[in-house]
Length: 220
Ligand code: DX5
Ligand code: ZN
Image 1 (cartoon, protein in one colour):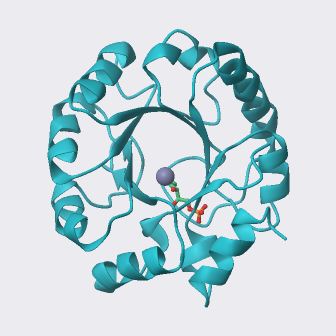
Image 2: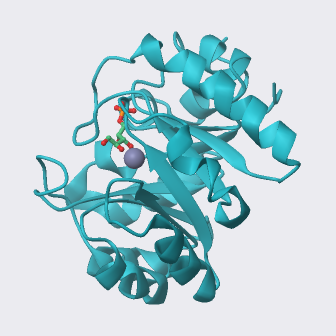
């Protein structure tokens, strides 16, 4: 698919004692977006940060902030993330009973809206809300932690979503999150993803710019 996918490094793998420096460094290194993993210790078995951290980082980068909400319920916090400066707000289809309403809410705040599918979640979860989706994110690990092994079982789902998006004629970005490395990227791109989210493969590298360039070049 896309010869030059968007690269969205995940701050989850950064040095949390130096968040501002880590954000400015990744922008200098050529990242397209900054991916922000928000976890609540309830929807996923880990806790990270909330809108206060997003707000604190916002003035220090021009990168679009790609907020991945692993929280349930999500609706009561969407406005706070929007006001904090998130540009994209993505929610899991399981985060609440009214995904359609959540996407409407995100868009009503002028933000791009995304739907995230867990490994066990079928593509049908998004079929009837395609008109409200700007982004669809396929989890290729179970959400909650960085550094996990890529689930190749999700590749057919990425391909199926590629076809669904193409058939819709809508300009929806297809993201892949979890275990994205130079080894797994060729198969991910072949399946049709257009945005690669990578924590360990970028922030765990000695040279952020080289790591980003290698992902963008398709893992070579
Ligand atoms: C996991 C997060 C991912 C995570 C990916 O719940 O959604 O964004 O940072 O980390 P890696 O790239 O290390 O698998
Ligand atoms: Zn994420």
